[in-house]
Image (tube, rainbow, N blue to C red; front, side, top):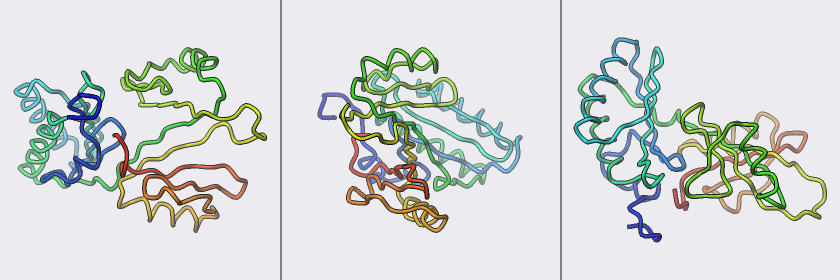
Length: 223
């Protein structure tokens, strides 16, 4: 059980479990990508997942492309990952093996937008309205679009009297094994390291003009 009394599981907990090699913890969800190779195989995999999901009474988000299938799992009642998602993830991995479909978890990434503000309540309604986002039921400082393209905007508290700074920045969450290669590629492409004292939880990089981005992983987080 979680510290708040819920049955939510953190990414560190899940990644230490057996049978979860096809999956990565991405914020509140587990995500997987399966290389189906063609549409017919992908559709067959979707149909088999549907049968299992109905049996379990627990349903994933599925995004079928021509050559791969993206799967996202989370428990809507607690807005997080639970044993129900772990059970379904393992069954989906077995479906993939039965079909001869390989998983490609290293290719998964999720991008969020951070906005610096000294007063969340003052600007939050505007951004919710203009972007058509929904409240995060767990975090008041975050707005989401889980039913659409998955845009997330979160508000980072800052001092009103700070010197002018970059107001928006990107957070890119990647599988932990991809963080170092992604950072090295960015540095080789002209970026610079701003801070890595919280690595691998997050590392702050900047481009040649000082625009910042955080490369994040699940390590050491609640989700």
